[in-house]
Image (cartoon, helix red, strand yellow):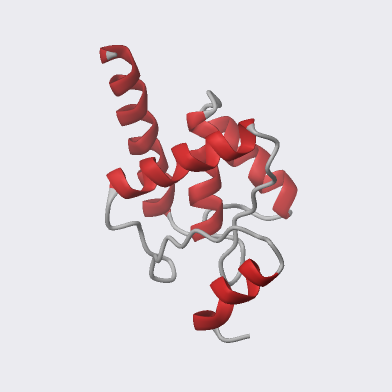
Length: 116
């Protein structure tokens, strides 16, 4: 399947599609974009929608975003990575920078919620 047709194929089966382009082994360009996306997914999940995260190997980018999603649900980044590592059967995410990004996301999210 061509990646350019992924949205159309998903939508033809009634599956919502949200893209968050991240280079392989890379990091998101915008913390705000990721936060908004994950907040939308939280709302969908609360309304009984199923959500899935994927990337080419399911180790780096998707694990990083899923860990950030779990952080928004109140799970620590350490616990999130433990769960994901157990589920994948190998250490995730792909790079130390991806792990540090989620830890930074966690600190930023926690600080933001303290201010509101």
